[in-house]
Amino acid sequence: MARWRLPVIIWFLRGSKNRYGNKRRPVTHQRRIPWASATLYGGTLFLAAAVLWKVPARPTVIPVSIYPALPSKPSWMDKRLASWKVHPTTFRSWLNQGIALLGLVMDPSDVQAHVNQLLATGLHTMTGVPLNNLPALLRLEIPALATVHPAKARPRSEPKPPRTKAQNEVDKSLPGDGGRVWAELGQDPVVGIYQTHSHESFWPYVPTGSATAYSTDWSKTIVQVGWWLAVDLHQSGIAVVQSRVNNMSEGLLASYNKSYYTAKRLLKWYPTVRMLIDLHRAPQNVPPALIQGNKVSKIAIVVGTNKLLPNEYWHQNLAFALKLSKVLEEVAPGILRGQGIETVPYRYNQQLMPADVMIEVGGPNSTLAEERYAVHDLAEAIGQLVHSDGLPKAQ
Image 1 (tube, rainbow, N blue to C red):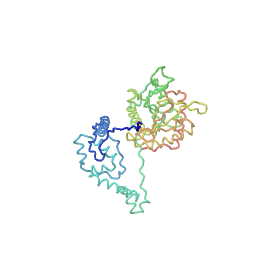
Image 2: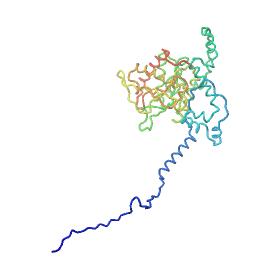
Image 3: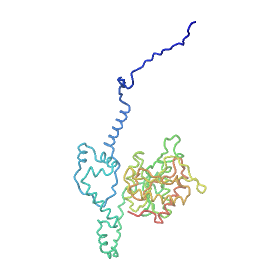
Image 4: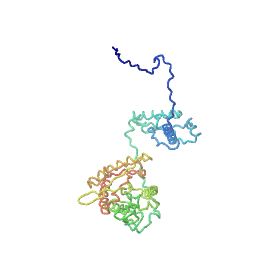
């Protein structure tokens, strides 16, 4: 009888030596350079170096200013930058802003002057007496002097500047006042008005298909709106001057440069002006407000700050704009566009005096009737501030 056996299966496995005793050579991978990341990183470093080399940082404000800084020799950083032909306001100012107190390290010769200023400021804060004010120091030592008031100097009335030929220029196409370019309503004007974008008009009054709502038909432009404002102010008992100089005669880009000199001339020729208005309409369409059954252009006050260029008056301009917007909302509820005030980084020639503001009335979609209602309410609000002595004091 045959003998059956179970089949035997033999597996042949390809094995390796003991893992602990195996001396096999480790597999090595070829290192590859990440060219994309390296290029991006290198480009970023190059751009950063270019910015530090050519683009100046914004000027910093030194809070301590009781004593002038002591004269000092150039620091080693000054000499190094001079040898590299790099202006100090580029590379050095960026470093000063990025790393606190780095200026003291780069220019040790200024440390003593800086410490003097800090000490003087500290003493002034604790005692309330500025060390560079001799009468205040004497009153501190001799209290009886505090009861003696200095004699008030008599205010000197400055003579009016002589009238120039330019003030008598006439353009018959201008609205009102015989077409005078400098329209004067009343003696010793308190309010001055000019229009940087003098060509600003409104869509209903420009030819169909026009690319922009601009015109030189002054009766259909912001110049006409400024004249209405001047008339209403004068009727409320306020002397006013409106400059109708064409500040866009050299184009839109040059308008602010030209209007700067227009505003400077206005303040020079009429030194009694205490409020300066650059009148505009908004660049975008603005729906009108409905006030007492009439469609009225909405108004916004634009206040330029000192973020890009110095403007010592911007806080005073903002405070005045807040007062004006409050009175305007009381005179005509709903007339303000948005919150009524817009602060912008550009100063828009508002560095000339306190109460120097830009006022936007309506937009390119507004009608002249809507503009007329709006400036009537604006004149009433300004009149209330003027008659209640709400304007900043003369400089």
